Image (cartoon, rainbow, N blue to C red; front, side, top):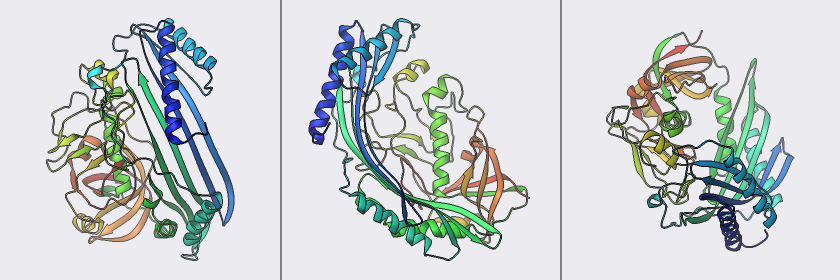
Length: 445
């Protein structure tokens, strides 16, 4: 596929229509299909030298067929007419061997997107390989030359990708759009005496001009790494905990997982049957904004063609909605929320100032800047993670800490949320400032 993007998109739409027609010809009562085409460039530079260079060029087709309430699916990277026929046949064969599932099928036609707004997601980077290598070198050099205690580098990585995606189904929906994603990151090692630490920083965006400069990324990676030198443990006991903004985003992702329909209908979520309950203090508003221009999580429709829409997950601290696709909504006796494939641009409204003001409010406690392990039990909400960060006294950072564990329960942590800062300083689909939790158990020395 060497055509211009508009021509490629039209070709993908034709392939999806071919898949759907073939599925109906082979006897499927309903079907949905998708086609993708992506190109990319990834560059890794380490210690000033090019380490890896990768050009990517991928395409794929997938089809899901329904015979009544029986489902089968198949995919291929071959775009030929014969491959389309064989792929559909494979999906139909699988469907004949599956059991009927009462909730299996396409979404209600009334929920499908009728218009596909332009969300300004397509910003190709006209970047030569030589220019990309130079940007990565500048990033790593800015980091390595900042301080002589930066003794090694895991390298700087530059990535640029462009993706075209089309989805359609036999209800008459057909939609697609191009999108881009660019990123630059750097990871370093610092040493002073017997202390050695590693850290990193990154930037990512839809448009290259929205990225932080290579020098900024490198300096920030170095500063974060240097700040961790000579870390200590802290005494075991309860204390307030301030999750830095990137770490607080992880708590929001835990919330999203607990609200997802797949976990709810399997009864694997501590938030089952919690709609309408007070989950957070009443100042908390958590909302989804799928139509933000250029945002990393923006999408005009979800993975089933259902229209995405802005909504509050939590308002005045009360849980207002789950995150459902049509299947999980059916299993729960509810209606799809347009979240097949996940959440789109999740935001929490701040009620406090920057990190310095939150440190002053905390006065004494732990600032968490790194979390380790997967110690989150979504069934019970129990939370136990390895952590690193800084110990705070008198509202000011005193020294770095590591090799500690923080523990609590997500329900309790949500209820004990004291403040959300306005210091969101990182890119992503989930955006938040730092979170101050009233009290958690810290296991240290």
